[in-house]
Image (cartoon, rainbow, N blue to C red; front, side, top):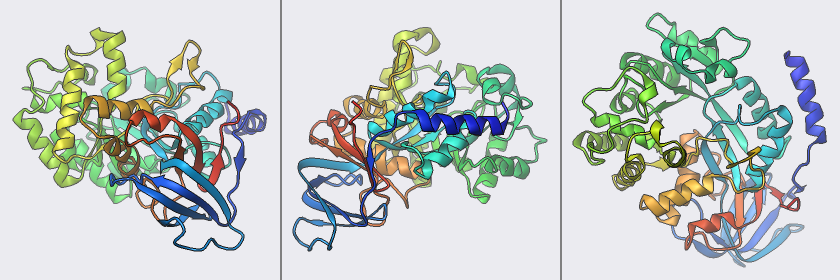
Length: 442
C-alpha cells in the first residue's frame, strides 16, 4: 500500500471510530481533596490539591492552603486517590490487530484503562510512527507512543518470520527499523538510518557478539538514542550488555544465562535456560546486579508473557521458569536494581476475537505479579509502572511522577492502591495532558 493511500485511509478511519468523551481542561483546573500517590515510592499524601495549567501540573499543595485562581474550574474529589498515568514500557502493537480500523479503539482502551504512555518494542515503524505522531499531538485518544528500531545479527533475519511482516516491501534486514548488523556494517550510518524512522531507542535483539553490542551502544548514545537489549543477546551475555552501556535489559528469565557455562549463538533457546540447577543468587548473577546498580541499568522484567507460556505451552520454556523468574526479579529489586513494568504484548488481554477492548490493560496484571510474587509493596509496584518506566523510556523530565512541571497525566481511583494493588484498576477517570477522559462509553 502506498504512503498516500495509507494516510487517506487512516484519516477516514479516524473520522468514523468511536472516541472517548473528553473535556479540554480550562486554563486552570484544580483537583481538590485527593490522596496523592506521587509515583516516587513515597507514602501517600491525603487532603491535597493538584493545580493543572496548559496540560502540565503547576502546583501541588494541601487543601485550602492557597486561594483558588479566579475562574478556575474546581473538581472536588473527596474520597478519591490519584496516581501518575501508568506506562507500559514494553508493548508490541503492530501485528496485534487484523486491520487498521481496530488500532484506534485498541489505543482508546489502553487510555481508558489508565495507560497514558507506551513504548513499542519492535514492529512496523511505518505504522507505529504514524500512530505515535497522532497520539503524541493529542489528535486521537491514545497513550503517548514511543518506539524502537531493531538490530540483530544477519542469521536472526533468516530464522524469525515476524520480521518479514514488520518489514514488508523492504529487503529483509535492510529496512531502517529492522537492520541486520555484521562486522562489515557501517555502524554510524545504520544508527542514523534507525534514528531517521523517528525511533527514540534501539533494541538489540539477538545473534550479536559483545564486540558489536559495544559498538552499536556507543554510537547510539552518541546520536542521542537509548539502548534496550534482551538480557541475553546470544552470544552476548547480560554482563556484556550492561558493560556496553545498555540503558534497559529485558526479560527476567534470560538472566539465567549470566551463570550458564556457555551461552549459545542461537537466540531461539532463550527461554530454555537451566532454571533447575542455576540459582537466582548465583555469584555471577549477584555480580550482574551490582554492575546494573552502578550503571543505572533498568530491568524490564516482563513476567506475564512467560507465566502465560509456562501455563499454555510449557514445552517452549525451561522447567521451573516462573519460580526462578519471580525469585530473580525479587532479588534484583532487593539489590537495588530498578525494575520497570512492561507486558511484552498488545497491552490488552486476548479473547476469541483478538485483543479484548473491554478488559483492563495488562499493565495492572504485571504490577500485581510484582507484588504477589516478587516482594514489591503496592507503592513500589506503582513506582515501577510510573517513575521507573518513564526513566526507561527516557521521559523522566516529562512524566512518571506527580510533580510540578510534569505533564498532567493522572489516573483518579475510587479505592486506595497502596492497600491493594488491584485497586489501580478501579478507575474513576483518566487525565492525559490536562484533558479529562471519562468512560461513558461503558
